[in-house]
Length: 176
Ligand code: PRP
Image 1 (cartoon, rainbow, N blue to C red):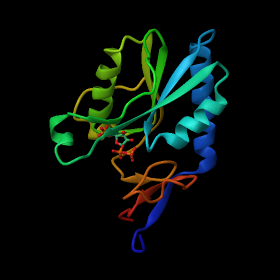
Image 2: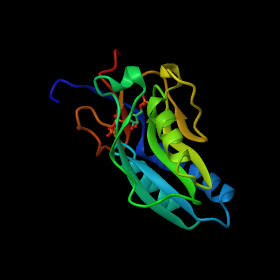
Image 3: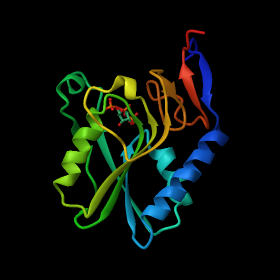
Image 4: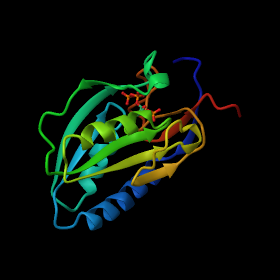
């Protein structure tokens, strides 16, 4: 941790403003319904907790943990579920909450897996999207910010488990 440099990309206030906008949009589109947020551990924890407090519709939350960026998973696209949901999603309006879409492999897998459980609807909200890194076609339904191919930390995102607690999002070891 000692030699790593951080450069601010998105400040806490800017993130909070965008989260509020996303919450408005989602609240309007799901009006009259209850939404089940599925928070993908661990990175999405901060985003999910901020987002859910801004929603103006009834909301439930559940958590799922998957392995990604493992030794073989990135090339094969096979993602392993480390912790599954506690309850059935059948017939529910489900919104997957992610911190970042990178190659798209994780969400591509998760979307297919969760669709097989017969939710009423299934959408994805991500705070960050790095379309330049995509390896499979994937478009989130809601996106906070599109960013270039930077390695980012903070607001839930980590490097070797560090930096998740930072209020802003930072580029790790920027070249300039
Ligand atoms: C990150 C992120 C997504 C996934 C996106 O999780 O939270 O789940 O990678 O990458 P992809 O689009 O290339 O599949 P990570 O494996 O870093 O775990 P973490 O959330 O526990 O930090």
